[in-house]
Image (tube, rainbow, N blue to C red; front, top):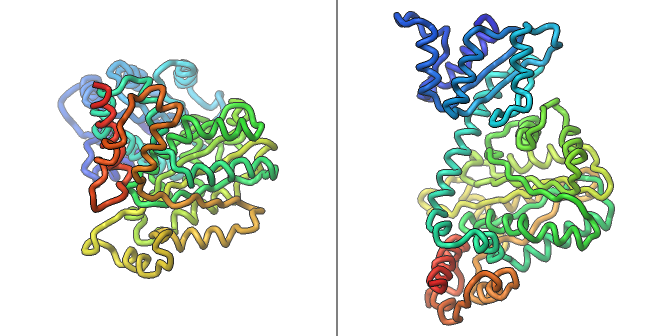
Length: 428
């Protein structure tokens, strides 16, 4: 208990301030119970276990951890970097025991305790965010998942094919390889939050990216990975790097080279990270986080030939009622010069594009703004070969009936839900 006392106290203060129940053994005071009984009760009632390891391993530590695993409690483990001869034999044996054990998360190695408590709090919030996000996603799609068999589910994302975005996305990816660029690629996808940026990215992930790169003569593994944490909560390029390296489940050395090494060992030719930026979470400055992301990628090392590394940034504009809009949202809406392409992020997009226009540091590409689909789009989607093979025929009159007489388009969120219900009906 002598090690990391200050860090544990800082973590406890942060959790206490947020009203989150926590148990830090040496700060519990006298309880009248023996220590073993007390920590066993605490572990069994916990949702997450945080273990910090340095030079020594107490008698109860091993039992705490094994009890947490038995109870299927999420474990976050942090180990200070040092030579094996500096650790106690018990701790060294314990760490070796964890190597290769299933259901145990990767150990996070840190060089010094400085800022460790901040890192742990960030990780805990990321864990909570994932749980909340998964719960919302499960709730939103529960009906859809009950309706369709897995093979149909795998092909439904094709229904969010957007011609302008598809054409532009493909041209930017293929041009990247034809020009033999070695700089990261930053793709910006603006549009109202109701237009379901995530569905479009999923379509690219499931079918488009592989086809585009094969056409460009690039064979090998291509991956799109989603950053769960909101980039609005990131305050420096190092935070972005930490999130990416954590997503790849690699050991953090504080260098972007870890990402390129990961691609090499996994024989990966394309790695695109996806982040979602919600305008209302930007604290009044929708361009700040975009500039931070651009700054990070502009300083990223050159990529090997015939490889691409970069990020798809989904710029999700909240459509809030005028009475609840902040001053910054009203300001941006007034300054928009082109209503067909205008949005909260326009000024920030233009600034980033102008800053990196020569592409020597960063390739910034802007995809066409997401707009609401029309009936003609739905008819085209349903004729796609991947859809026709799995989805029953849908009459044109039923497609037209989804659109109100006073509207020629529907937001993707609303349309997608109606369309899946219609396909369910046709499937009987």
